[in-house]
Image 1 (tube, rainbow, N blue to C red):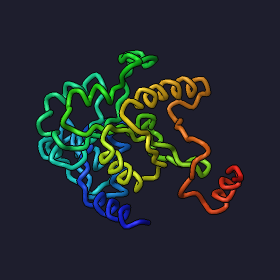
Image 2 (cartoon, one colour):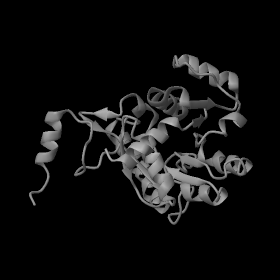
Image 3 (cartoon, rainbow, N blue to C red):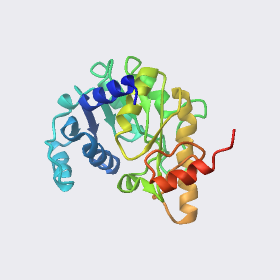
Length: 243
């Protein structure tokens, strides 16, 4: 591990991460981040009492906080539906300035069979327009809530694609997420969220046909699979082309 990566990792361990929302994705992110970062994680929702009940349900040593306090964190993860996200971001635009905002949303329509956005944009890009002085970073766009319980299947980690127009914010989030049991991939600029989000539409249709929805995730072959047992890593290496 290089000194730069070590510094970034140490910095991430000191960052405060706020998860906002008590739904299925909020719960999944909360328990996953808590395992890696403990009390560096902040949790809140529209109703603090309900947020506290979620914490107690998951048996975590945390205390739910008011939204105003949560928004002081270094990294903000709103787990709102896209239909509510832009108005929420506009309302809190000032306090979000300079912060990293991780966007997990997909712009589903009411039937969940298409998107409300055009092909030349994405939920992440629309969010960035609303909060131009924040650093919007795409992550967990293809991660269904049940996958947080078992993100590794047959030795392969579920992929999380990270995209942002800020290279610094993208690298920071990648280092932050590498403490979680997922394979974290650099997906480049925010415009790539157009593809990433629509991959969720495809995976949803495939999973429903196979009868496995929502237990489905992406894993791109041909890349390093860090964290595999040694013998499975050896088989992965055997698939690499000979130079």
